[in-house]
Amino acid sequence: MSAGPGWVDAAILGLVQGLTEFLPISSSAHLSVVGQLIGSEDPGAAFTAIAQLGTEAAVLVYFRRDIWRIARAWVLAQARRLPQNHPDARMGWLVIIGSLPIGFLGYAFQDAIEGPAVRNLWLTATMLWVFAVVLHVADRRALARRTLDELGWRDGLLFGLAQSAALVPGVSRSGGTIAAGLLMGYTREAAARYSFLLAIPAVLASGGLQVAKGLEDLATVAWGPTLLATAIAGGVGYAVIAWLLRYISSHDFRPFVLYRVALAAVVYALLGTGVLTASGA
Image (cartoon, rainbow, N blue to C red):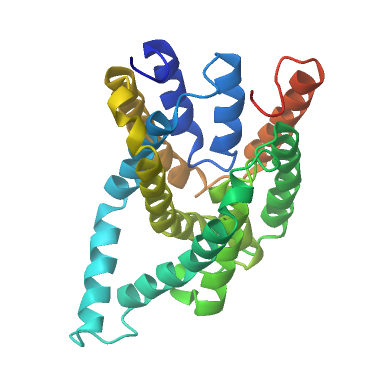
């Protein structure tokens, strides 16, 4: 017997994953809410892990030239064929340094993060509006002068700590890291680009862990709907990355701030009327 959502639900979940993964509006909040509303709040660990590979692939494909250039320079620098202060080799170290906080905290607090207290929709809704305020303040106070050439070890670590906040549903990985970058004086484009690069190790590690956890479910996966969701998430996610990087070159984050506040209000209302349950059960 196959496990997971049917074709229509899978397509919806894939679309939601692709649309929200890279915008500062929290994909985890959207998947929790939409999942309950369409009756697929628990599509299965294997389905979720495989579908997430779509958005992971979108990052790898979109930034393939950056990734190759940085990885190549970093390897050559370790082999002493390039200086350690080469810009791309240095960015490789900065991505590694920035990835340490979420790796350590995610592993150390894994049980709590995946538990009912953190996955509670009341907390998710609260984080939606709390980080809407954070993003708004960061956007209003942004000096928007610094570029990635000025990124140092301290700032890379601060970016990483901000990314770790996304371990709590409702925060948003991109929202947390971009807000941190704006508060440190980086341009919107620089903050967003480093946010995406920083997400690659975290997203791949998280996806790999979820796949490993879901291996026992692979024999029962409904492969058609699952692959459909993966393809939709990847295609839509790629388009969202391209759009966001163009959008922020001449716009601020006000629409995302307002959307987060509105979504939080809707979730509170749906929880209060019993349409949604806090635990998703």
